Image 1: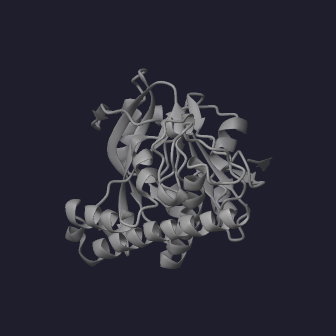
Image 2 (image 1 turned 180 degrees about the vertical axis):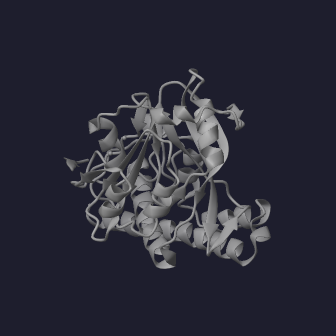
Image 3 (image 1 turned 90 degrees about the horizontal axis):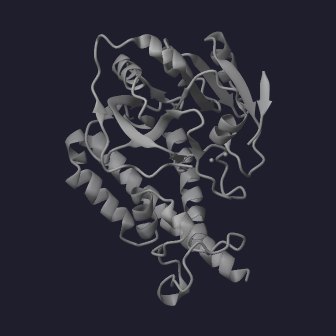
Length: 333
């Protein structure tokens, strides 16, 4: 068992991307050129399902952060290689650490979470797109499940999680234990080259229940609040990533990221929109209205309502955390 320690960036999404269609004649042997990396901690519930869908891929690597359950035993029994990651609270985090230290024997790497389950349609499409030398990475689409029901409407969910080994890494964000998250969550890969898209979705279905889901999003929210304060120059050790002369807004409160600093310019359009509005009082209700009404979340019934409401509460809590942390920093000046 190898021991590694450590984090990296996402690339701006292209406006025009080819969407490949699957074919029954696709040579699935091409999946042998893909290493699947699964970062985990205490994933004994989800991991068997995830691993059970990965036949045909070249290598399976499970990167564990000190699980206290049977996660590692499950991974080894399934034939996966297990790496142990010990995070020191700084750069790199888990995915970048793997990219920096692991000796890949394949040309491609696919990052999956333990609650993400691939389908035969997805594998067939991946095998086909890998024959195209033009692209260095692919946006992946996901189908969400919540309260035991698939959400067919509402806000879309996609990630840049399949790319050539050596084409780039996850964005480097300097942090000092903003949260307990030892893995890149909202950091994105920054790649050099053309990006495509795979249409066949991956099932995103958390089997560990609402307690884990809510706790996880509480950590996400803390990280997002600190990231916002960093981008707007409000963290004491962060420096100011805004352009010279940019105002934070009336009353010297955190007011946005309209400046075109290098860190702001590196954000994807979706990230820039998020951080521009996330501290506003109306961000949470607008998210709810957009996802539940304009994106058709109401068509998913009660599950769609609860999901949209939960996400709105998540964004409202981020705003409160921003205000709280900003006040703490100001009081310590």
